[in-house]
Image 1 (spheres, one colour):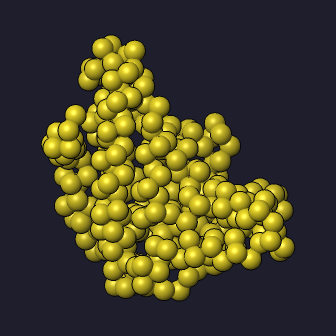
Image 2 (cartoon, one colour):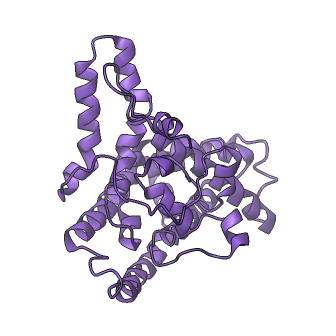
Length: 301
């Protein structure tokens, strides 16, 4: 497969480009419906950062995506299931679950490995929670993202099919980024990721930290014990535990990498240097342990 063929194949992955006008329309509708109840629901500077992150992440993702497509192609070629798994209806259903499972672990590791968190943290940097926040994608996470899906082509699923499913999953996730929808029917809340569940994920309240990593299905969080219910008496506080107070897109995209570098330089032992890179955010060799799991344990949740 040559580079030209790869680009031609990737051009058939039209899920996200098709959805962009829908995203923009949804943001306009959300702003209109929410402006009376939330006077500052959308803030111009905040929205500028979100749009900048969306554009920048798309640019940065280009080469990792091409490389991933090539790797997926060759893994699919050596799969013993490649002639069994095609694009039958049942294959799409199986792929939906496999992709969503991969996304759960990709997202969870973005919160539990500080180097990965540095690439994901821009998505959580806004103190607003609206459809615009959904576009505030992590830039650095684009580099390591696709390695969490490497095992799926080995099960016989072709790369274009996989990329389409990844895109559809992300489209669903866009619509859980809203404060206007309180709760959906209980049966839906029990199975699927919803605005209520994802508000928890974006909250900086200790009770909610590092919970609800779901893409489409909330069942993964329940199975792997990372689920937290949104409590009526504890409104989510959006943003980071320590907000960065800037609207500079480059600063938003890179600030945590700089913080890791400073901590690595400060640490004397090599074991501590590595822990600053690979342990969860909040770990310190000479200060208070502020990792989410530690804070939640101290709170008793």
